[in-house]
Amino acid sequence: MIKPDATQKGYSGAILDQIIKAGFSVKAMKWTRLTKEQAGLFYEVHKERPFYGELVDFMSSGPIVAAILEKENAVADFRKLIGATNPAQAEDGTIRKLYAASVGENAVHGSDSDENAAIEGDFFFSKLERF
Ligand code: CMP
Image 1: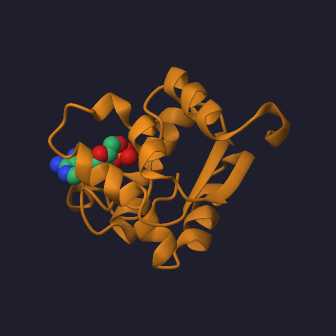
Image 2: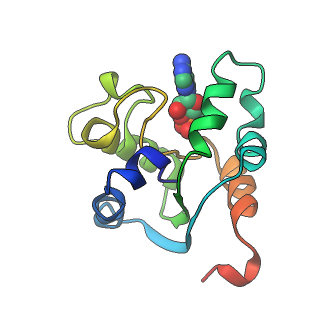
Image 3: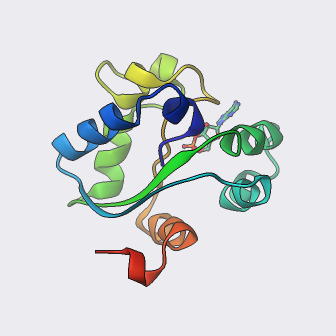
């Protein structure tokens, strides 16, 4: 997912270009905006964290790009491409180093396992929206 900070700063095109040049293929994609309720559900696993309210407010504050990406070792390779959650700790050249402002407004989200990738893909896309 490309988050509201990055879509609003006009970084979506550059981020997608970097993702595709890194060898990912797009199976599904949409430009949409989450309601607070939807953002709360998407990040339900973080419900007990102190930053949950802030995260939900931010993730529903503007449009996002949701995508299902395919590649060998996609989860691990995507996490490498986007860099550490906190952009201050992200390696040079990673998407978060280039485009993220803070740990909260960190430009992109990547699934942390194949299992969660399937759950998160189902959150956004029906079977008819995947190619
Ligand atoms: P993401 O990969 O989308 O998964 C959970 C998100 O919670 C994470 O990226 C951050 O944007 C956010 N997050 C993690 N830690 C903090 C924090 N300390 N303050 C605000 N947001 C956070």
